Image (cartoon, helix red, strand yellow):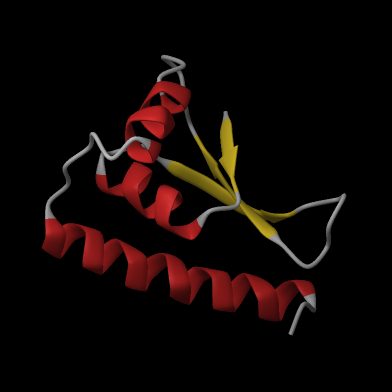
Length: 84
């Protein structure tokens, strides 16, 4: 499993085909949610480094669709966990 709190990194991972398994509240900071992805090949960290160094390219429309989806899911998760 791979976790990140960053919405844009999570959107990039989803756009690249990583499977989102959960959006979970962080136990150390209840104000934040983490995106949890399947990472069977242990490649997400390397992908994060490429993302950070601006070496990745993604399909823009798919990225836009995925960011809308993740924002909607964050909103729903915040409502169900009592963060809003």
